[in-house]
Length: 156
Ligand SMILES: [Zn+2]
Image (tube, rainbow, N blue to C red; front, side):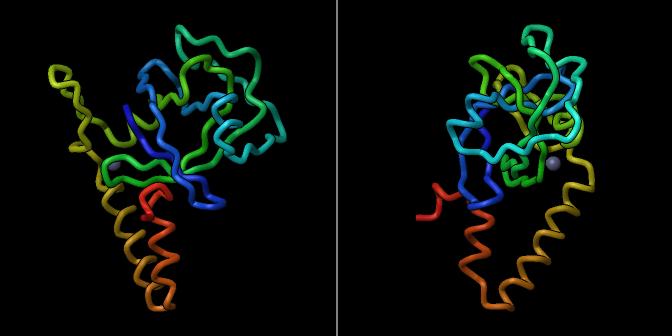
């Protein structure tokens, strides 16, 4: 599934093919992908032991780094921390925390993912974003604000 990840530092958008995986216990990003795309990797003070990324993906050892970014999907924006590990050919795995947070509707026949079962907190998040936007507009930071909300490759 195509999602857009936004770097927090320069608001650059990166399109990514994410694997939705109900067998994964978290959100994961491949280390090679993170480096190639220039995501800022934060070193963890304590290595994180991950119980299970996926039955098929084997993580060699503990998680040492995380990347914080915004996930854009169908009008939903959220701040997320992804654990960095070696996922091989997979770029990003969106596991149970993300699937459960939006309670996705999946049409298996049409191979479509819909955000129709979102809990009220999703709407609240959007409203909060909206309030922030208004404040920024008042401060005359209109363009800057837009750049923050829209991934870089759509700026033009
Ligand atoms: Zn949602």
